[in-house]
Image 1 (cartoon, rainbow, N blue to C red):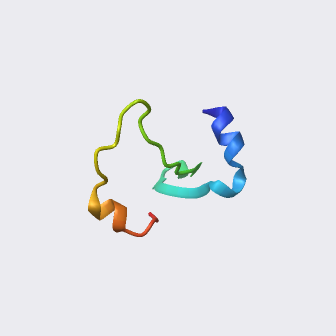
Image 2 (cartoon, rainbow, N blue to C red; image 1 turned 90 degrees about the vertical axis):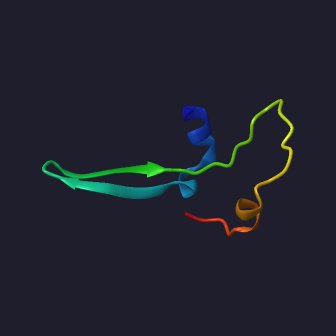
Length: 56
């Protein structure tokens, strides 16, 4: 995973804060990477996901 994160570069990561607690905010950096299973044929894409715009 460290090699993949290094290969992506800093511009691929987004900072996210998900909880404000007693010790301060919980935050980290995340990157989304599209993957697919190896060795399995994709029979058909899910239409809703295939036609939807990319984003979070």
